[in-house]
Image (cartoon, rainbow, N blue to C red):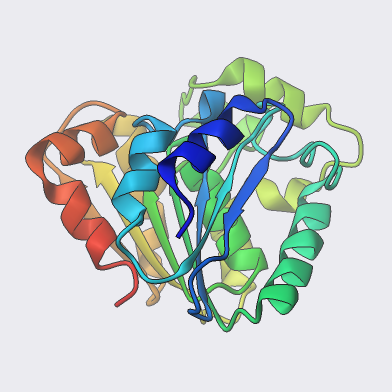
Length: 233
């Protein structure tokens, strides 16, 4: 198992977008996508500790350019599709047979998107955005992260098919099981999650909470640890 010291040392390297712990003999990998400023809504080190007891290989991915991964990852790829190709090659090298993906907030958007593109086995997403298309955002008055989204819209070669995850999921083979958690007292978060409930492979769970920082609330109540402990079920 990779030590906490090694992980903290890796986090200090601002040029590394991916950290992989392949010490487990398991053929399952858990991928955690970071969101704004590389966070999971809780400190990334703390998230590392929560995942540590699980017997699986683990990968932590950071959005160093802060454009929802649409610009790729430094020294790895310059697009979403390039990241997907890199991850598929990594899975082959590690002998991966099962893929579980996690994310919170902006990282949850990435978790759902990459879950679809990688045909993952399971995706667990906290407070995900399920569309970033500009006209749809204006229609539903979703004003969060405008500056970051503007960068996405003007990223060279960006694939706009990835701007609406409901449409993208409708074209998939529905193999992936999605578990979406959201604050049902938050208008924007409710809108993004509840529109996905039309799919039989999408399970949504709402909590009586108003903030977008649901994952912090779940950690405080002890519910986050319970959810994470079941991600391999």
